[in-house]
Structure formats: C-alpha cells, structure tokens
Amino acid sequence: MRKMNILKCLVGIAVLLAAPLLVSAQQVETHIGKVTGHADTGRQLYFRYCWGCHGFHGNGTGENWIPTGGFPDTPNLNIQPRNFVAATFKCRSTPTGTLPTDQDLYNSLVRGLTMSNMPSWITLTDQNRADLVAFIKTFSDRWNTDKAGTPINVPPEPAPTVQSIQHGKELFTKLECWKCHGPEGRGDGPSASTLTDSNDEPIRPYNFAAGSRFKCGTTNHDLYKIFMTGLDGTPMPSFADVIKPDEAWDLVHYLRTLQVYHKSPELALWMGTKEGAEIVKAQKVRGTPTGSGVNQ
Amino acid sequence: MRGKYLLSAVVVVISASMMAPARPSGGTVSGKITYEGTPAKQKPIDMSKEPSCAKQYTTPPTTETVVTGPNNALENVVVYISAGAPDEAAPSKAAVFTQKGCRYLPHVLAFQVNQELNVLNEDQTSHNIHPLAKINREWNKSQPPGAPPIVDKYDKPEMIAVKCNIHPWMHGTFAVLKNSHYSISGGDGSFTLPNLPPGKYTITAFHESYGDQSQEVTISGSETKTVSFTFKAKPY
Image 1 (cartoon, each protein chain N blue to C red):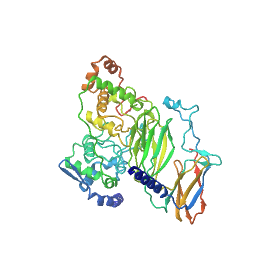
Image 2 (cartoon, rainbow over the protein chains, first blue to last red):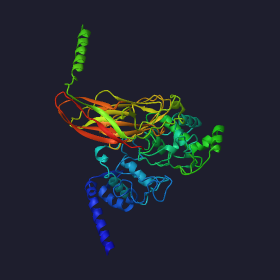
Image 3 (cartoon, one colour):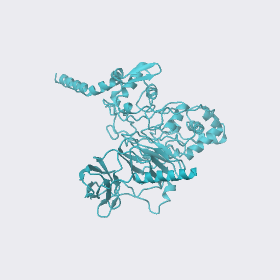
Image 4 (cartoon, rainbow over the protein chains, first blue to last red):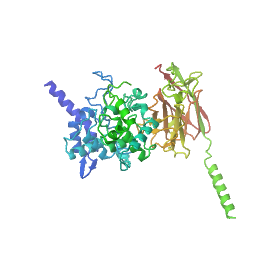
C-alpha cells in the first residue's frame, strides 16, 4: 500500500516535470521525405524507448548510463548518450558548429551508432522515427533560434586508383591525422591517450585497423562527411577549410586500405602494389574500432 | 582637376571619421586583482611529443591556469561591465588569436559580440581549434601549418574555454563581451576601465580557474573609482 503511494507520488512529479515539455512539443514538426513527424507523438515514443539512456530531461544522464568511475568501474569507454539539451551532434551532413538536418538525426536512428549502446531503430516505422526526431528537437531552444546548417556539397566519387591512395597516404601524414589515429591508423597516435570530449570525458580515436563501419555510417560518402564536417562534441575537427574535394576523396581511398578486415576495391588495388601489400601484411589488428584494447 | 576634388573629398571624409569617435572623457574604474591563499603550482609543459614546438624554448614554458605576479597579483583576469552599460556594436577591427610555440597568444582574448575573430597558426604543426562554447555554437576546425586564418564571430556573450585536442596542454579563453568596457589584468594585477559615462555599473571579474565576482560601482562626472577584487586561490 505504501509502495503504491510512493509510485503515485512519483507519477505525479513526473507529470509536473513533463508539463513544460508538453507545451513546446506541440509546435515542432519534422519533414523526412513525405513523412511529417509530430513532437507530441514522438514524446510518447521517447518515454517508451529512449529515456532509459538519454534521460528524463534529454540530457544524456538516463539510469543506464554509468559515468566514468561509477559502479561498476568501467574502463572509460562508456560513451555517454547524446545530450539533446546541448544540441551538439556528431553525425551531420552540415558544417561544424551548425545544427544537423532532420534527415541527419533520422539517419542516426535508422543506423544506430556502431560500437556504442545506441541500437539501430529499424524496428520502428518511418513515422515513429520522424516523430521522435521532432520530439528530440524540443529539448533545446537552439532549434528555435538557429536554422539547421546547409549540407556540405559532396562531389561524385572518382574511381579509386593507386595514385589516389598514395596521395591520400601523403595527406594522412601532412594533415597529421596520425597524431591521434596513429601512423598505421590503429588509434594509437601520440595524442590518443590524452583525448577528452567536450564534457571532459575520456574518448579514443577510431582504430581503422579493427573496424569496417564508422560511427556515422558505412559508405565512402559517410567517411567523406566525417572529416569534412567534424564530429562535433569530440576532438575530431572539420577539415573542410583545408582539404579540397578531390583530395578528400584521395584520403577516403587511403583510409579504406587501413581497414584490412574490410574487403574494399581500395584494399584490393593497394594489395596489388608491392608497397601496399607490404603495408597491409604488416598491419597489426588489436582491440576494437573504438579503441578498447589498444595500447596507447 | 576632378582628381583633386576627389582627393579633398576623401581627406574630408577621413578627418571626419577620425573626429567622430572622440568620446566624452567620463569616469574611470581602476584597481588591482589579487589572490589570497596558495595558488596551484604551475608545471613545466612537456612538449617532447611536438619537437617543432619544444625546440622554440630553452626552458619549457609553464602552464597558465593561474598566472601570478609580485604582491599576490593575479594576471589574466577579465574585468568587464556586466550590467549598467548599453550593448555596443562590434568594432571593425578583428580580434586576433595566435597559436605560436604550441601556446595561445594571448592566453585570454577578450572581444565583443559579433566582432570578427581571426585565429592564426604560426607553428610548423597542425592545430585543431576547439572553442568549447555552451551558449554559442561549438565548432572544431583543423588548421595545418600555412593554412589561412580561421575567421569567425560569436553572437552571444560567453566565457568560452578553448583547447587544442592534439596538444592537450594548450588551453585558452575567449571572453565574448557585450560592450567595449573591458580590461585584462596584467602582470601587476592592475586593470583600468576608462571613459565611463555617469551611471551605476556592475563590474565583474572573471578568472578561468577561480570563477567570477562582481561589485557595484556608481560613477558621477570624471572621477576615478578604485575597485579591487581578491580571489581565493585553491592549491589544486
């Protein structure tokens, strides 16, 4: 009986706390293709599927998230669920420092974020996901004051060649990608162990050798966008101002050759050269793509 | 003949524009920023992972989270008017933030809302400039050696911590302020806010490690008022 009262009390508090959200939730709509998402419907879905990790207030501190040093003592690899109040997003088609498009958020729901606790929400309908995106946007006032950025232009991908891979390799050195990702792309560069995200939580650079998928997608097009938009909220900067589009594709082609477990046309081409075959053969694959088990 | 007219017109315009901003000399707030207690000992920075920067120093530079001077002076404190002064349009001159020797020059850069910010890289290594804005938009850009300046501006006032993820010892601050009445305490802890019209002001002092403090001050006429701030130093 007493338990019931506490429960009632908690529900009451929850309703009171949610009231301000309800008001703003009414107005937000998203447009994903032909589907129009509504925040008030998304709200119900959020409090069914998302709040356990992203939290009641959308700030990424749901009960499933264990902070660094919390119990059980996790090895700093527990990536915090996205904080929707800060409205800073890793996976975007838009320039660094801008809000993502509705489609970008929707794509993250479809795809999930590999090697994190964020699953792919393909079990939901298109309408569900569009509604959820609309609701997520009610957590931050930024969506009222700022417009989403204009997606960067991704030119058509030229066919990979040995020359483009070699040029990409030079760029990897010149632009000092290796400072974090390591000279062989194993996530063990000299700065790797010092990296923190924008909340001062430790974060590790991507270990290309062990991975095939990226946090923000699986295709060459996704890879292009990752370094040309940057992963906001993380140490990964945007290179849009310093890499020309054709050079960016060269870098994409080279990065693919670092993924020795991932069969790609780039890897096959590279293996066909003496230099490439030696490098691929010497590649040591340790740990996970997100850096667990990597000696830094 | 025509050219001569044009020239004199230009001279008139220039001299007019030079005369225009002559402000009525108002009151002044000046003072000294000090600390009490034991500030954290600043450590030499190990730049061995970045030889191109390390070789620029005969003795390694120290960290700058707390920079002090003689007589308990506290440097790098942003003193500004947080209330009482009207918001001002941004000056046309850009604020410049330079990366040199894997450090930020200046360590604390104050500028106004919507004022142009130029970030330069004078090093032979790549930096990534990552201002951790919370109120303004957070961005993060790579700047290899020889890359053009990064040009940006902020449209809301905020104290923004700036870091370079590649070189974890690099920390700085952008102080984005609403008006031109600001000063950053020097090596002797002193600051001056001149040209204040009569009025009641809230003066705020911000330090990157010790937070902020405010005091009220009323200025009438062309008097000079002394306002001092003392921060409690934490030994960590």
